[in-house]
Length: 81
Image (cartoon, rainbow, N blue to C red; front, side, top):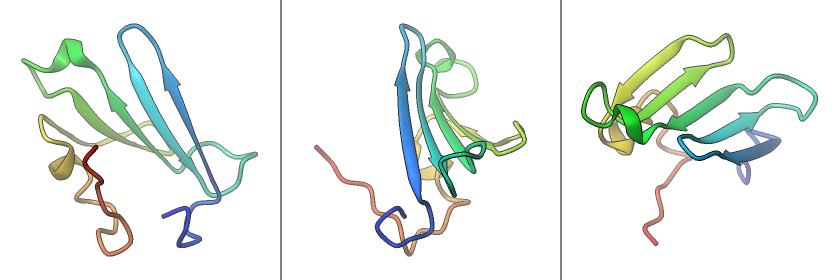
């Protein structure tokens, strides 16, 4: 989505119990979307969460593909390492 021009910037943050990917329309704004991974929630609601700009949880789940479904799939592809 960055290469397609929809997002201008992105950031990643890693903590002991949390990994966050944030996508920005502009670098001076709040992130448009935030993808969080919390391994402590893997047995409850799922480790992955898609969070909107205003802090509302859009989708939770155990599988990253299902959590990313609300985003435009035609511009985004998951790459397996």
